[in-house]
Image (cartoon, rainbow, N blue to C red; front, side):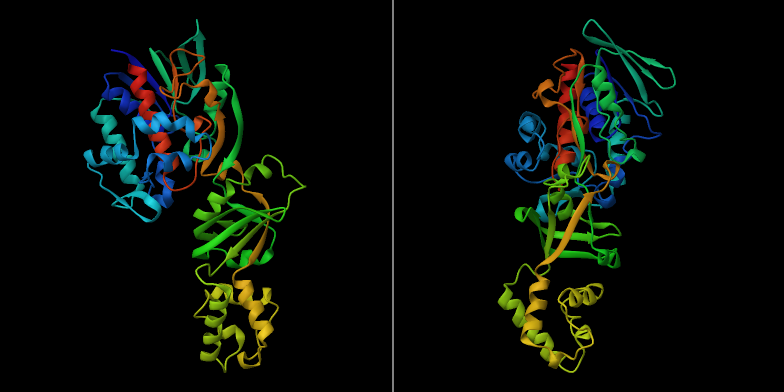
Length: 415
């Protein structure tokens, strides 16, 4: 029976341990934190977007960082396999908008509890509070690992699944990159992936906490549109966040990290009413103004906009908020209509890497066997999850990558 040592108790590490144990390995799982699955608990706003219900091509296309590398792993352990795994272990799932898959309970804690219970049933030896300090290599193979407490662990095969550098409070502090570099692996420079954006406009702070649904946001770089997304976004004290903003950040984060490119002009434009043409929106505004003909402009837009947005939109359209509706000119009304579909924000940067949902960069995929997740440099070393240079959009794709690479690494580690 092969002895397998898994380093890292996140989604990829737990699945790697489960896969190795299911296929006959004697598995020990080292986790630096007091418990496994800490980062999983905060995914999907505490609901855990386990995977996405799209087809194989959809999974690959939505992994913006080296998606083709994952073709074999996604084929070997599919999104349907992930759902079946949880169903068979007592956790039912459901499909929501955009193919997003969540537990029926809407509790990330239930996902973590399920994984922990499977580890227990398979008799995986989970050892918490054991951050790995050093990996010792001899004759092209890992001989042992040494933890910060001085304990040594030996095994036949080692799987590194230590996660990225985002949310270090959950254990994802980038330790694995140092360990992998020590093994001779090339580390593609790290950058934040799926990261909130910072804006220059002061009025954004007044909208802190406001969530908008069914809006379209477009990123312009030097006046040219580079990407757009439809869905939900959120205003914060520093700028903007939310699902569509995180996805858009994929297209521009490299312009701001690690240093801002002063030559690039980056603008986010928000269409608050993307389902309507400008003409139809104008007609809608006219109907509202007829309804509130005797009110001031600031009191005539409550049917159209969230309260927090009204004063700001009026100001951006250069209209006197105290002006009676019946005194508005056609030109003023059309300025307001235009503004509703062209809210412009200047992007000045991205949030720190520690706040990214996912870390971009990591171990070069050229040095990993895409079929097995085996290192091409160290015979008995495998990798899984975010430590690899793979990343994707929001929607369950990154967790699917973690589960798939973890499963494959565990499978071939025993093989």
